[in-house]
Length: 289
Image (cartoon, rainbow, N blue to C red):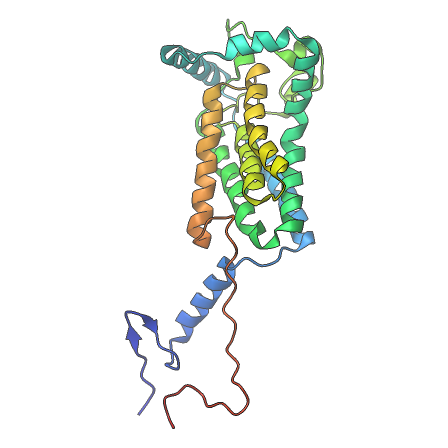
């Protein structure tokens, strides 16, 4: 008689032959979902290509200036109805302290990239087993943000008509934003929703808080996204609702990582099941004498 494949509700039994196609698919999925130590050359290439794609897609989205300004007016009106339209007061208060607002301009322009890359490098070196799942959160967050830029063009507060916001980069003539001054032609000025300054900074903060062992580093991890929120509002680059949009995108990123790996990204990685080796002289577990 030929071999008989036995399938139970508990899954395939040991020693019972399974269809080759099913075994191959299962092994492939297990391999893809099992985090492996990252390769430096691949990670550098992946990050470079991902950021290049992000920049191209984000800046290729039609600016739709009229619609972006209408959306900004609507958000400003909605925040007034909620009683949370505090952006103008924060913007003017920060602008009255020259050294502070100039520092915020440079903060907005640089730390967004420097800290995010720094956390990725730290993950790669100190937590390679958690790297892939945590990186997936960041990439999924950024991908869904691109959809937001396309579907909901939004002007930042500094570009509103009659909003009385101060464009702190233009006023203080600092290099602080790719969307102001001579650099404005290099970036889509109407991609304020969602704020990836918040999405990325919160990803950095949660990652440091979850994995860092030094207490003050964990505290800085929590302070970083909070300070970033102050900066994006004070420089009139975002409404606080843009920050809420960044938070939603980040939640989506964590959900994608959870669904793919079946665990919290910061949890210890599951190892691939090792093959059982028979001891010398031991009999195979076939049930036969």
